[in-house]
Length: 209
Image (cartoon, rainbow, N blue to C red):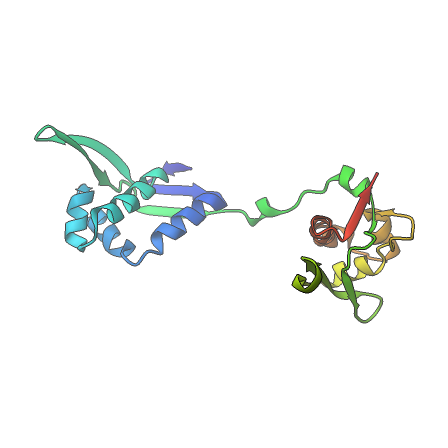
């Protein structure tokens, strides 16, 4: 977060999400209008102008203050302290890099050997061209079993088609990618690791090594 030339820059997904949640409230625009037209304003003053509960306005103003969008000043009147809020910047830029969600390649994980877990009860639905189009995983037991269908990308489907059966020797992710003849490993790697982690959690894939 930094401020320069009357512009406030907010960076990161968490901050963008928090700011978006605050600005999406139906009274946000009216409250910002007050902040822009008043030198400073208190929560009670804003609440009375907007005909809202003071706690609603207080939470909104405090949320923007926590993000650095507003400045808060403690003042005292009739021996009772309270806060006044102002918006010093006239331009706000909010941005984040979706790349922060990219799953990093983990060589140690890629070296672990995997195969389908014995007795998982999962159903692999075959598609065309040596691929799996989806996997149905069941949770619960007996009549209370609940199916959950997982749709797959093309890369994931080709990878799982070559996943060793429970009776076969396990293989590493890299070996299975090679066996499946997935050429663009760099592009498909994130998709493959994601579905492997999902199926490990759902006890469909067994890990060893």
